[in-house]
Length: 271
Image (cartoon, rainbow, N blue to C red; front, side, top):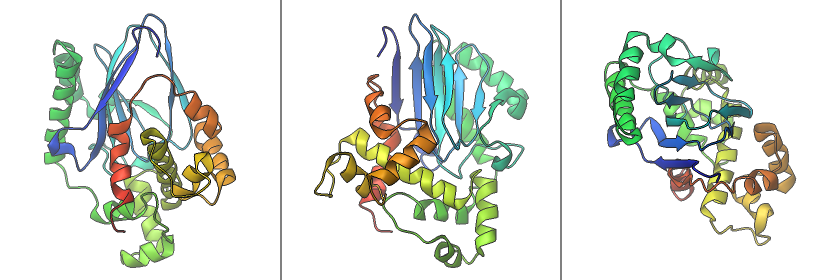
């Protein structure tokens, strides 16, 4: 971790537990900071204190963002299919960084001002979450079929997409269309993204692997990959790095346990 740079994750407010995966506060130090954003299956809000908030749409590959020095950002990472109220479907926002004030309009302007006056990043984060609670109360709930599909596509579960569609009483094309609108990507892309997030969760937690080979090969098998080569191909596709470079380069001191806890929780729960 560079001098003065920090990143702290935590669980969201209880009222947001069904739609938000994690919230965080990030501070940059005296130098600019290169942040590598990876696909998570969900959208994110990045809110620089005193600046203009951004909505990061569903990612299908890595995005490098250079954060200015001495910047404080509060952020919210949403669960797949549980994006905040927006005036468009999510497949229109894939791989985009958008000005959130243009999407939320007057309510965003008031929120920007209130968060700038909050006094502390922790207070600003509470204000942002309280705003989201109000937003979710005034809109229709998350598509329940998409929510069930997301739960079925979590890591460590071998799920055939045609079988999943039939279980939901949908045709494969209907499942794909609803997933594109509510998540931003197809069920197959979401399944691959969540499997990789499962691998990162295992690596972050240092979970003992069931494969006797242990190490990277064991993590790959436990996360649902055919073998280590399969993991390496997917890691390059989703992050631009090999698994060893990705994990070795994350010696920044960031603790992502709050973000990966939902994935580890599904590891032992029944499908």
